[in-house]
Amino acid sequence: TQLLEQSPQFLSIQEGENLTVYCNSSSVFSSLQWYRQEPGEGPVLLVTVVTGGEVKKLKRLTFQFGDARKDSSLHITAAQPGDTGLYLCAGAPHGRDNNNDMRFGAGTRLTVKP
Amino acid sequence: DAEITQSPRHKITETGRQVTLACHQTWNHNNMFWYRQDLGHGLRLIHYSYGVQDTNKGEVSDGYSVSRSNTEDLPLTLESAASSQTSVYFCASSENSYTEAFFGQGTRLTVV
Image 1 (cartoon, chains in turn blue, green):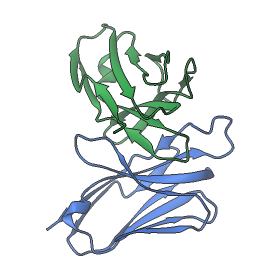
Image 2 (image 1 turned 90 degrees about the horizontal axis):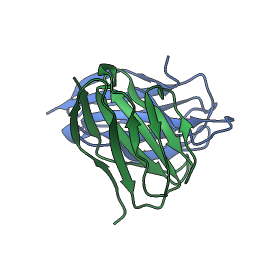
Image 3 (image 1 turned 180 degrees about the vertical axis):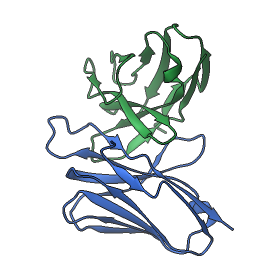
Image 4 (image 1 turned 30 degrees about the vertical axis):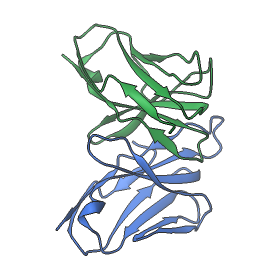
């Protein structure tokens, strides 16, 4: 069982549609990060959410951190083919002696068809 | 510009051989990480380091080792390569767990 569970695992939609992907855990996180990874490349950071209930917007992407800091969501409005990629959430569980123990979810693989 | 580089990008090795994957960063970050990425598992943490002479085991550390003799480098060694270690390996560095982790481009390792 992964510390961070992401859903759905795969998502295929048409250009212009909206979508939401989720990142859930039973653990509390000091912060969560969302990354996007393209084939043959390493992940690249999109956003970090720190405060419970926080909402951050990055153009058509809206990120929310749950009030209890155990979950997060990524909503994309009017998806475009350029949004295609693997979306990963990551975080270091709060309260561990080692707060640099960054863990990743398995990711949501998004395909946006033109 | 600061960067993080991995080498080689691709490697094929035989079962039982020792293999070392290189990771070099010029961000001057104290934290460095090694992950493996397999379909359905995402990125799994192998080893990580807070700084020079510090190393820690991650969730899938068996069969792997690292050493940190300077800030810039964290080589990953597979002591006796096994087919189960066929994977894509990513190195990353960060200032701390709340800031961005910068990733290398990955090393695709095949153990035959």
